[in-house]
Picture 1 (spheres, helix red, strand yellow):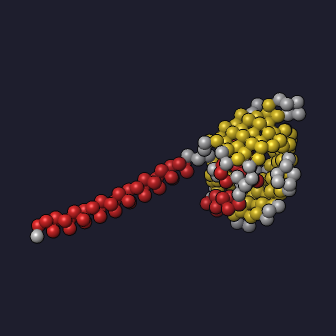
Picture 2 (tube, helix red, strand yellow; picture 1 turned 120 degrees about the horizontal axis):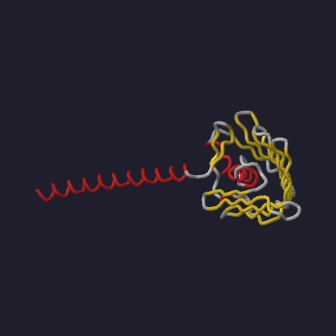
Picture 3 (cartoon, rainbow, N blue to C red; picture 1 turned 60 degrees about the vertical axis):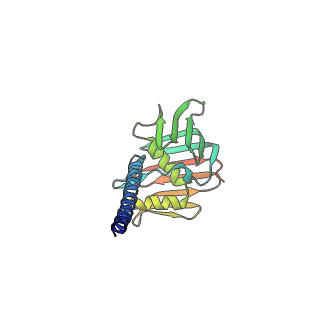
Length: 198
């Protein structure tokens, strides 16, 4: 009789131990995922909407090409040539003026953004450039989910995209096979990329 009782107790203990282990693994997994997400680069798309940059694998179509960049911000206009390499591993941009002198370098790899420029204002961060690039060129389902997570909505017709807070447009994007134009209505800047995008 005693061995049978001992066996039942052991089975209960084993079941309880397995159950407890399963819960601990889930909790640790959730905590590590939350910690990793917390450390990801982000921007404040509005004063209350924190957009966490998407991983590079969400790019719609990889590119490795020359582009012409025109930007208007704070009453200033900037023009540059850019070489952009973007794929599932990251984003790399090199900005140059018409004489070939460097105007800036951006890299988004391994979950971090680096940006240096002797020309552009100090408050223009690499995270904002990367986010705008993602709004133009990353896939719709991933963008829609990421923007929904920060209280915004995303529309994509194929030729145009919009980010909205409620009914109010914040960002409008027009796309064609040789140009992409982004207008940030909230922050008051515009940029146009000219190249080959199909």
